[in-house]
Amino acid sequence: MPESAFLDAGFSSEYYNNLKYIAYDEEQHVALLTSALAEAGAQPVAACEYSFPYTDPMSFVALSSVLEG
Image (cartoon, rainbow, N blue to C red; front, side):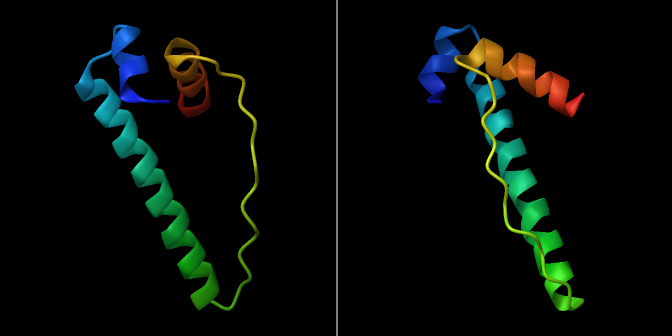
């Protein structure tokens, strides 16, 4: 979702940038773990595809708070 959707929903640019950083950080976790498994001789599993039920910034944030606690 574009930043403008979050701004229109009442979230700040700082909040949106924090979400982008969290997404980047999660991607780095996957890269690190995949690399560590491969270096240890294990075959990392293929990435899964998910279909999360969010339609707008508010439902995205609500779902994220449930998943991340």
